[in-house]
Image 1 (cartoon, rainbow, N blue to C red):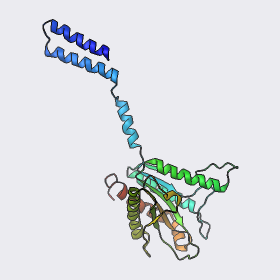
Image 2 (tube, helix red, strand yellow; image 1 turned 180 degrees about the vertical axis):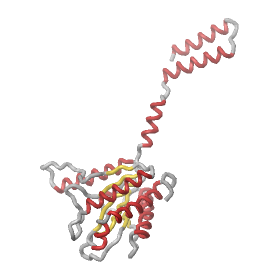
Image 3 (cartoon, rainbow, N blue to C red; image 1 turned 90 degrees about the vertical axis):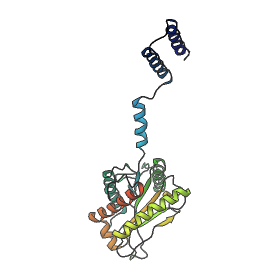
Image 4 (cartoon, rainbow, N blue to C red; image 1 turned 120 degrees about the vertical axis):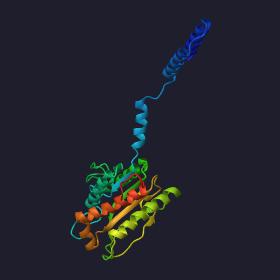
Length: 265
């Protein structure tokens, strides 16, 4: 820094001693000084600036969490259909639709595998605990605008109970609760219109589910139907019905996440 000041000062004095300098020469001196100062202090390169923009853009818009997986099958229908497979099928269909809308998506799982250490030494209980903690970690550290956990319900005490319902976190920062409820409301309205043709349901706040406890980002759980109900179970096993659910969830997520990031809905 001292050397640069000396060079600029000496060049200027020499020119003035020689009877002044033309404007072009003054401009050249200023240019040289700026270049030298940039070398010392450092000017962000185009690569550095691009890298910064890339990192900012990497923050996912949505986290999709297909419930269960691996040794944890979740609920089961009378004919043996397990929840984990349908959760994953719907989540993959939904991911494809969201990515087609130019939204970045992160999946907690994209295959039939739990998020745990499946070594023989681990107990089923410890694997389940690991799985839930890892899902929550992915969601909390994602910086996502919304996390959607996809599940199927079951109520064997009354097999007539049916329909899709959305739950949101009521145990979080006030802003997170408000945003979670807003997303849940949008999704529930669309599911009521297109899926719950017999009986409409309302979104519901919950705090007794691990993934909904004090989340760092807005989180909802979508229970897409009841495997304990014969009609719901048959529908949920049908790919066309899964497509319908994925389509409505995509529509609702686009509406919530950013009304101008998605295509016309």
